[in-house]
Amino acid sequence: MTRTSLRPDAAGSLIERLPGLLGYPASNAMLAMFAGLAVFRLLANLPNLLGLVFELAFWIMGFKMAVEALTNTAHGRYEPLGGEELLATDGDAIEQLVLGVLVGLLVTVVAVWLGLLPTLGALLAVFLFMPAAVMLLAINHHYPNALNPLAWFELIGRLGAPYFGVVLVFALLGLLSEGLQWALVAALGGPGQVVGSFIALYALVASYHVLGDLLHRHHEVLGLDVTPAVTRATYGNPIEDETMAQADALAAEGKAEAAAERLAGLFRGRGASDPVHDRYRQLLVQVGDLDRLAAHDREYISSLLVTEKDKRALAVFADTADRVPGFTLDLPEQIARLVALATRQGQAQRAVALARDFETRFPDSPDLPRVVLTAATLLSERLGQDEAACQRLRSLVSTHPDHPLAGEARTQLAAIEQVLAAGAGRPAG
Image 1 (cartoon, rainbow, N blue to C red):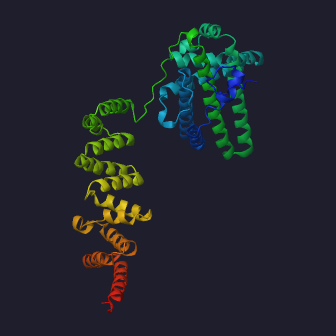
Image 2: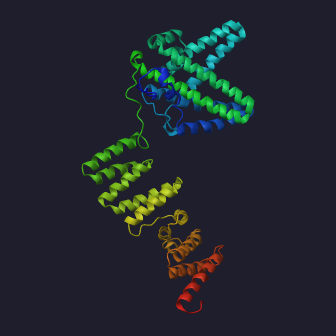
Image 3: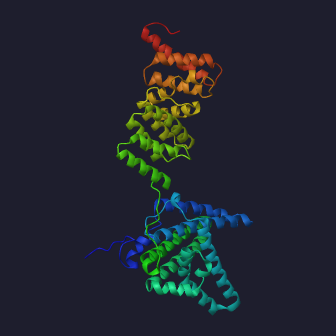
């Protein structure tokens, strides 16, 4: 017996593919976004207009993810997206949100003015035609077209029977979502609202993904241009993609220096992503241009520290210091941060190298006592360089006698001097 694939983009009936389609939102990135938005929605409980603003923000973000799911699936891209990849705009989301509000108002008017049977008829019409309206609006961005019954019938006629299977899934997801939200809030209050909001977002994105799958599988009869799939940047943005491709082509031709220069153009603007910096550094090492490597890495390390990427900054420093003798950084506060990080990570030699000549280079730095004390401690306790540690501590207590760390420095100095004296066979002093 042949086992049917459950991949959502595989061949097979809707029932066979449904587990994969419904599992689309279950990536770590999307689940994290759902969880964050679900907690954020608690702010909608604030009084008056403020709560309404937060509720609106919640649904705009939810519909942005839903429209993104529909559009990308229609273009054959079945991989779930991360938050940094969302290209759908607030306008796209508001279009869908307004569509839902208009349909809800229409049903409300029918219920208020025409009674039970017409209301049931209106709900049945919503059940049957809402998916068509959603798809038409996503395709054409035109309300008169999305709300035109003739357009619905034309779309349904081209799609045929598969449309009604998707209608059933779309409706069941919506009903299940609403029912669970109501039950959870009634039973649990605030915690129930968080869980219910999470379920609502999951169901919304999954239902729009199912609609996108329907469009993709019938794009030929619908006359939709869904190829090529939406291009996503491999690096920070499409410009980086193009520039990296050009640099790689030059490097393949043996023109590593020209390749490096091509990448350098990215740094003169708004900056570049870490993979571009890595490739640039590789090319500079390849051509042996260590001066440019050092100049680049001083700025790159600084930008990494500004963006709180301290561990990466320390790794770049370590690599460059091993290649460029005497490589140093220019800002004392950044050196102090990396000295502290290297110490915590047990990289004594690296911390001492970072702190080299700190007293003479930055005599007025408020970080000087901490950096020197740390370096002296490591010199003595980890590297066995007691004489060098003593020299730095004597200088520190001489230049900063009243600093809060001066007492600790004196204690450390006395202990090291005692060790030196014992080794020399004479009393300390």
